[in-house]
Image (cartoon, rainbow, N blue to C red):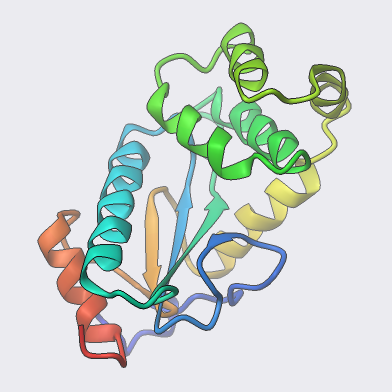
Length: 189
């Protein structure tokens, strides 16, 4: 990991406005820029789930790791990613962000409108409110803020991962990401 380059720094620090699991002042904070249609983003999602499980099994104390999700959509490469982002944000207003997040990554090959409504229904969302949010594009500004913050951090493509505000640029495998996390951690895992 190259920690000397300013372009590898997270420009907008994690905050309460973000979607996150854990606590923002955890010893390790992962910030993931991603979208729901990108296959490599799906792979990163699975790696992060594995990392969270490993931290939970290694440390009896909670909140050793915080995972932050931010949208980063490349419209020409992933035309369904924008709608999927709007769907997950509509679910978030009903307290179901992470549940929808996981569903969309599980079903990356099925992001057409009909499937998205089925996912909302399966989570027990208020479908009327959900459809209103989608039809009036109620969450576009929030999604665009995430994308802008990615550009400000030097991103040109998803997925991207920052570990304690430094961009991870090594190989996308569990062993190397875990080694980078351990190196970045003050708690000596």
